[in-house]
Length: 330
Image (tube, rainbow, N blue to C red):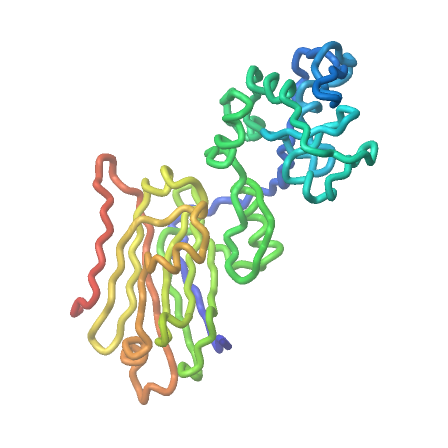
């Protein structure tokens, strides 16, 4: 969907903060843990089963638990070949049941000794360099890291499947430099959206603007898409941070014309929630096309919408419940 004209005006409010320049993070941390015994083989039912006896001093426990194919940590079932080389269950099928180290057939041998050793180990979260202080049993570590509050964020840009991850300062620089997103300082905004042919709505046409206020960053999304068979326009705000911090803020959006207006008030969603998830939950200001054309005035052959709004910090102990006023006469 072609956007003929978009204007954005924001109030500066004396909150000019320089956008920091950070680099992306690589979060693989190897711990030098006490050594465990080296593996030797033990005959059981005519099969060599590897058990720990003595280990080369340069080999860490973490390296023993690292799959040689995908380099990820291995979790039960951990498989091994007759010569004692280990591999994770996912990669076992990928290598067509052949050991990637010695090319021998893998069979169905479990490395129970290594699985048992792993049960007794504790490791720091792999996001410890980003501030996570936790130490976790080996088999609980993966579950924690999937939900860790210190894990990197996905790029919030909605126009492509961007795979960039990083902390907030890095993503702000990435949005500005790589996606050429408009950056504004202040807690009020004023968008003018003009479309010469409102009958054509592709799924989904969008725009993104980043606002810096209260020492935080917010993403304002505005887009047009098909809802069932009807085209709609939607605006919503996302907080560049975790959900718990997002609850400290509120925002309002307003669109109107011809003596009428729509108002939306709510809590910004964290960018932990994907753009599509927020959009499909309808958590924002939704404008049906007929209403949008009514607000535009004239002969309804051109769409002219002005969306205004503001962000404010929520007072302590506020219930923070969403309020939606669908049609309020001005």
